[in-house]
Image (cartoon, one colour):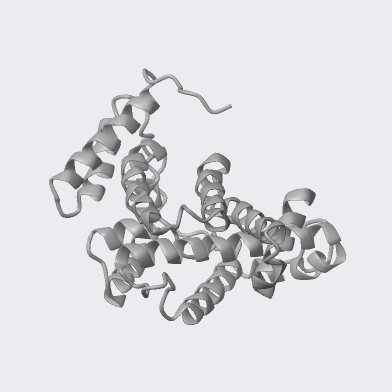
Amino acid sequence: MIALGDLSSPVALVALVSILIAVVLQVLNVKGGLLISIVAATVIGIPMGVTALPTEWNFGLDFTAFAAPFQTVPGTDTLAIVQVFLQPALLLFVFSLLMSDFFDTMGTVVAVGEQGKFVDKDGNVEDIQPILAVDSVAAAAGGFFGASSITSFVESTSGAAAGARTGLSNVVVGVLFVVFAFFAPVIGMVSASATCGALVVVGYLMLSDVVSIDWTKIEHAFPAFVTILGIPMTYSITNGIGFGFISYCIIKVVQGKATEVKPLMWVAAAAFLVMFVVG
């Protein structure tokens, strides 16, 4: 159950310090304030035992999972990508990952777009199709290389808040990812408590757009409400969006306005419902 935890624990104290530093620097409009809060909280967490110092200094990269879909499953002669089609249960996992990746990306794109002022007057993100195409290709490439999913992350909102507005910022971030891949032990020192402050400020920046919601219309307000509430309660952007889609369709049916719901919305809501029921 969600409740107030032990605020005297080292993990909580570092998180609170991280939030305090991030908010203060945000108020003072300090450039790079979020990054400063992360570094400061990481350093503070060392004597408190929250920041784990590297136990080994192996700066090499691990390519054992390269071309993983085309590696044989241990104990069999079957390729991993073929095994997926031989076991229906694995297809459900693939479907769940697809839903999660797609709607996480949609939620992130909208959040970053709002913060970076890349949306039109109706709240639509410009050039959404190329964005989704790049994200899809990147996710597939990440799976091939055996890396975690290469996709857009909501933490990018902090970059937009700091002034990143062009593709050059993305190129710089990409180059830094390549460089710091060789310094994984050092980067691994940064704990979730240290990044807490930056993410809280990002949450504040994202929530500032709720004023654009028409709270007088329940078909808009209630789905928005359950989406906003569902994301932190389930720790998943996808789940929150799923709650919003399903509730929107139900309300429209009750209002006798089912014809106003777009076909893709029906398909997405049904897919979410299946995902929630099947688990």
